[in-house]
Length: 479
Image (cartoon, rainbow, N blue to C red; front, side, top):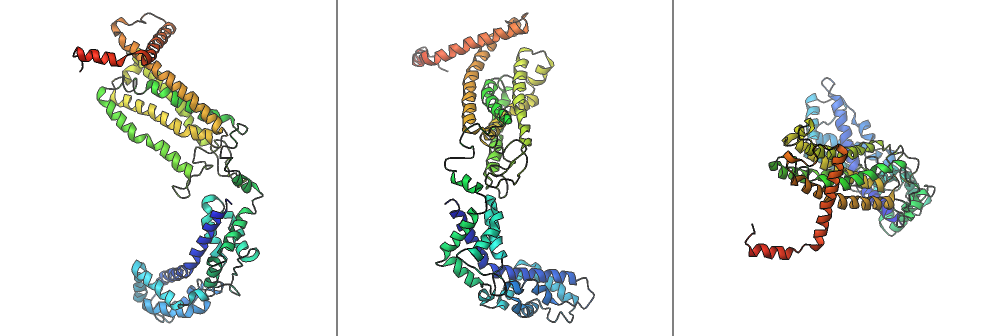
């Protein structure tokens, strides 16, 4: 059952909480006393303070330790050297007591004094409260958004289940008794009770979702029935990000616009910063790497719905927030296209203000090159999760986008190489498109780039590299 492992965690959390209950109570007593002493410092000498009510706020009838209040009060006053503070003690003694509680080691000694005053059998005297069951259950279930079932877990363990832990001051189980019901032969009953509480009360929505998880992932049954119209944006991000990047980088930008000495530095910078888009998506998608941050359907992750509504499928009706902000990443699509156009435009119109501000200008050319490649990284890091996630594309659109993007990459990269070969073949003083209209010039460059691309592709299968290498060796032409 999908709930059994979660139920086991809940039972372990409750057991751990019960084992540390007295420690928490003793710590709470010391904290309350410290707070009371700080308030009493405002009095004039001598300081009068009755710590009985302060300690009773922690050791009360609900946990069955109200009878230990006087013993704890006496022991703690002796330890802090403020005996008979109810009748009045010098203000200096109160100050020294507060200094004692401020020191971590001495504060822990005060906690130990409180535990000693409670007696060695405190686990047999302290009673179980409702919060001893609900608080650990809430904490254990918070990571899977099931903390709303904590009260149902408590009810099952105390009333309707097999474990039958009794809570409250009158007739409530002691810590040892409750631990016996949770740890011994009844442990299976406790886990079964928690498991039953988790699977109940969800109107079948969560059960259906979890039971189908092995065949129905987060992308549904891989159909497009639930696809939203705005899924076209992450789809286009993948196409442009994959298809355009190696058409420009690294041969044109930085290769042909950046001073030569900067090329290696740009590549080193990109080697470091390109990790961050994917790293953020991984952290936000997980929801576990940083406690309380992210999750598959959380708006901080690109796997959420990029529209107005996000909610967990197994807890419908509980809004997580809007996902509109992810459409800001749509800007990488026109940014990459515009930058690619500017790079090529600068190569052909060297006298233009655009070319003079980019080519061989270290700062501008470096920034634009890094921006272009980072748009590629962001488009892939955000685009694929955007297709797979709450936008409804699933594996069908994701694989389609990957296939089309890979096709564009394999087409435009060698086509770009053919264009560069043709570009470097001509001298600026005898430019082949001089006097042509822009349309005719565009036709010329695309035609020549296509020819060179076809030659290069054919050479991959027909060129005899071994023969050419042997000829170079015979002629001593190797560099």
